[in-house]
Image (cartoon, rainbow, N blue to C red; front, side, top):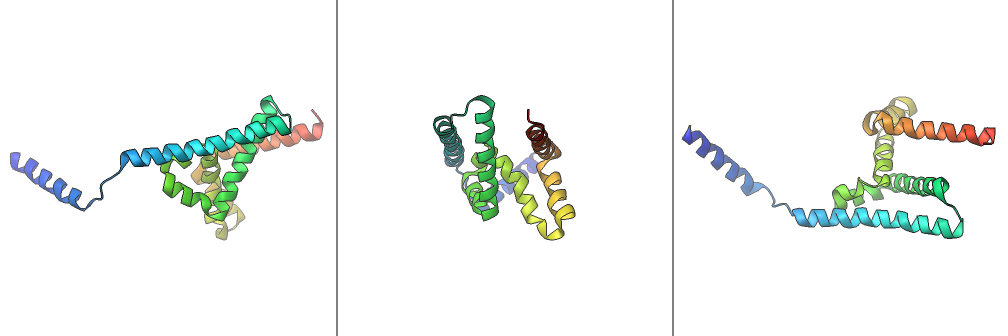
Length: 150
C-alpha cells in the first residue's frame, strides 16, 4: 500500500510539471473588474433614463434590463462578447448580459441548421427552457397589455 501512494504522488508531481500555474487572484480580480464594469454601465443607463426620460419604478427597471439584454445580444452577434468572456471568465457570465449571451450564442452557432431545428432548438437546449420561456412569456404578456390598453 505505501508504494501505491508513492506512485500516485510521483504521477501527480509529473502531471503538475506540465500544467501551467494558475493565477487565482489575477483571475478573480479580472472577473470582479469586468463584472463590476458591466454593472456600472447598467447603473449609468439607469441614472440617464431617470434624468432624461423621467422613468421610475418598474418602467425604469424594465428599460434598463431591456437595454442590457439588447447590448449583450448585439455584442454576442458581433463576436465581441466571446472575447470579453475569455478575458473576464465568470465576470462576464454573472450580469444580465451573460444570460443574454447564453441565449444568443447557441442560436447563432446553429442557425445554419434552420430556424426550427437549429436556432430555436439549440436556444432551448443550452440556455434552459426557464430563461427562454420567461422571456417569451414576458413579451407575450407585454404585447397583450399593449393591445388591450392597460
